Image (tube, rainbow, N blue to C red; front, side, top):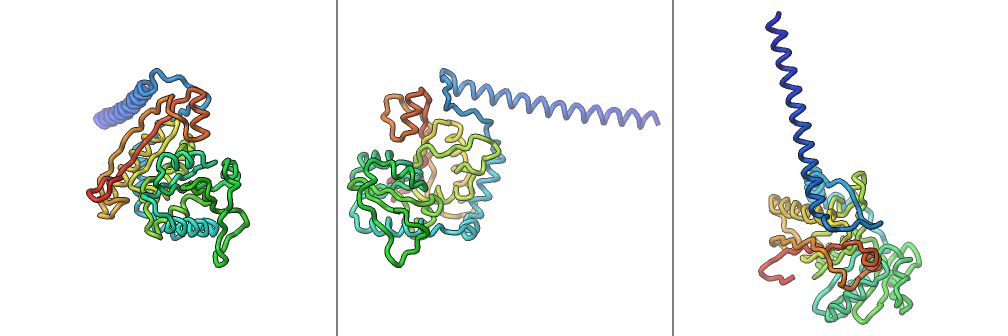
Amino acid sequence: MKVLEILMTMLMSSQTLRHAASAFSASVLNQQRQALRLVSTAGATATAYTIECPATHPDTLHRHVSKHVSTLDQYLARKPMAPHTLAAFQLADREIKLQSRESIILDSGCGTGRSSLVLGETYPNAVVLGVDRSLARLERNPYSSRPLLQPQEDQTVTDDYPLFQQVAYNVWLIRAELVDFWRCARTANLVFDKHFMLYPNPYPKQSRLQQRWYAHPSFPLLLQSSPHLVIRSNWKQYLEEMAVAAEMANQVWKCQEVASTADGNLTVSGPRQRLQEEPPWTNFEEKYQKAGERTFELELRWMTNDVDS
C-alpha cells in the first residue's frame, strides 16, 4: 500500500512539473514576443491611430488559410452575386475592350478615388479601375460630376445609383462589392496587371480575425486577382500576417498541384516603412502623416518566365 502511495505521489509530482514547465515555456514565449514587438517599434511614437493587438498564432492562421484555399469554389457557389456588381463589371469589361492600353490596374476599396487618380498619373498607359462599395465615398471625388455610364437595358440593377464613371482620361470609378467584382474578373479570365489595396479595414480585434482579408474565405480569390499585389497599412503586423498567409496559400496550392495566380514563385517585399516625405495617395495616408503615424507597404509578386510583373 505504501508503495502505491509513493508511486501516486511521484506521478502527481511529475504532472505538476510538466504543467509548470509548460506554463514557463508559454511565459518565455510571450516575453520573447513582447521583446520582438518592442524592438520592432523602437523609436516609434504612438499616436491616436496606432494599433496594438496580439499576434495571430501561426497554427490558427494556417488553419484558416488552408481551409479557404481548399473550399474557395464552394464558398463562391454559396455566395449570391450582387446584381449591381455584375452590371458594373460588364460596363468595365466593355470599356477595357475599347481601350488600347498596356495594362489594367485595379484599386480595390478606393474610397473617394483619390488613389485611383494618382495611379492614373503614375501609369498613364494603363487602364485604372477604382472600386468601392460606397456611393457616398465615390461621390466625394472632385470629378464625379462627369457623365455616367449606365447599364444597358438587358442588365438588371437593384437600384438607380450610378455604377460606372470616368474621372480622368484613363481612370474609371466603379460602385461594386469587392469580392463579387473579383469573382466576375475570375469568371471572365481577367487578371489585373497590378492590384492595389490601400488601408483596408484591419479589424484589430482577435474576435474579428476572420474579417481581415488574409483570414477571410475570399482570400484565395484576392491572391488570384493579380501577379502583383500592393497593400498599405498603418498596422505593420497586419501586413506581416498578410505576407505569411500568402506564403501559406502558395504552399497549399503547390501541395495540391493547383496553379495559383501566375503559376510561379511568390516573392515578398516588405513591409517597408514609407518615408514621411512620400506624397500621400489617400485621405487616410494624409491623416496618418500629419499625425506622425507610421505607414507601411507590402508587395506580393508571383514571378514567371513569361510574365514580367
